[in-house]
Amino acid sequence: MENGAAGNGARTERPVVLITGASAGIGEATARRFAHAGWYIVAVARGPEKLDRLVAELAPLTQIVSLAGDVASPGIPGEAVALAMQKFGRLDCLVNNAGAGRWAPVHETDDAMLDEVVDISLKAPFRFCRTALGVMRPGASIITVGSTFGIVGGLNGGVYCAVKAGLIGLTQTLAAQYGAKGIRSNLVAPGVIKTAMTRDYWDEKFFNRINQEMTPFDREGTPEDVANAIFFLASPEGSYINGQTIALDGGWATTKYLTPEAMFADRMPAAEAS
Ligand SMILES: NC(=O)c1ccc[n+]([C@@H]2O[C@H](COP(=O)([O-])OP(=O)(O)OC[C@H]3O[C@@H](n4cnc5c(N)ncnc54)[C@H](OP(=O)(O)O)[C@@H]3O)[C@@H](O)[C@H]2O)c1
Image 1 (cartoon, protein in one colour):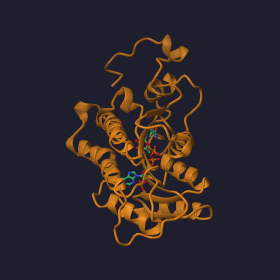
Image 2: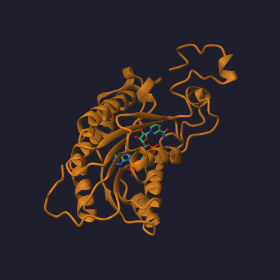
Image 3: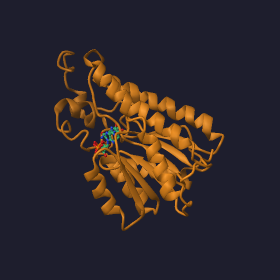
Image 4: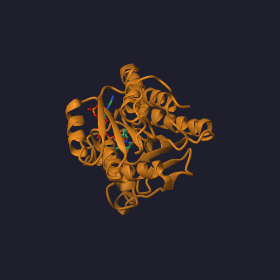
């Protein structure tokens, strides 16, 4: 599986992680988690300013390089993996985190939204996996950030739910095909986490009712909760976990929890619930 392409740098002693969407939210927390454990990092996102801030913050802790680009651009996975190989000579973990936070019911999803979400959140992770597999050695792993909405679906989920469910399929086929070669693949499925993607909706009644009020564990999930699980899956402690979807949601996806207030509320007319 090793890529003997010219231009690869010397193989470093430290393991290397490539994180997409590394400059904010869950990806940023993940970069911090790996940096504190001494991993070297390749950080990918579109905006160079936020990436520069991340590099400045983490450079005292570890070696980190960044690539500014849109994951939906077909050349970016190759550029990112080549950067890892040139700088560090190895790639031990790919974290497919960048995703498009766009929601609408299916009947309100136009082709522009359909294409955008599929390009960023399904085709891009697929291409990153395909490219990373070309250089990964046994012991490496791929961790993809899906969503609880890819496990159980969700109101107004539309194409977001469809691609997040598709990522579970991708994770499972990778686990079967490349597990035999010592490369694992797993998916973390966050419930709602307060980041730039959700901040505008966080206190809305409808959002609260279908998310926070249906979560039995009584605190907000954080980007660090997700980052810790990603790191665990990449680490030797997670080395027999392959093909799994792990929800980080305080119990949202696996229970039918309702707060007492929601339990005794009148059923909302369908017209108001959409
Ligand atoms: N927050 C939640 O409640 C939640 C729940 C379930 C699942 N998730 C999933 O978790 C992942 C991260 O979400 P988040 O909440 O951490 O989002 P966020 O805070 O908005 O951060 C998104 C990160 O991805 C980058 N990014 C976005 N689009 C990109 C693109 N096309 N190409 C390259 N980089 C891109 C952003 O930087 P630039 O804008 O500069 O590119 C930023 O670094 C997503 O896959 C999301 O679907 C989130």
